[in-house]
Length: 149
Image (cartoon, rainbow, N blue to C red):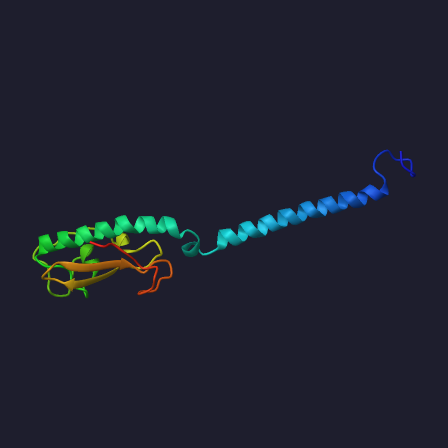
């Protein structure tokens, strides 16, 4: 029993309980702020590795589709026609002899939301270049992703 006749903690221990409660509240608030910061962090910077792993098979599929386009149509898509010639019939010459959709339009976009970059390097030798600009979205930087074929 304390001085005021109540059973329980004395006034001195209220101070200790208050500090413990303040500490718990601070931890909960800090955890909440941390969770919020992570949840709203731009995903293109947060989960790079899983995206990179998905780019390689997408690039391989696009390479295969470009070579199938040539087999069907008689020539590779020009740089100007781009990869969209695989999904929608080209309107710029040279027009393919035979055309059919080989990929869906959404497969022409990399995991960071930008179109894959295509160049017809040497049509005689069948040399094409396809790459993703990577997580920084800029062409010609270290994080660009391509296949070596």
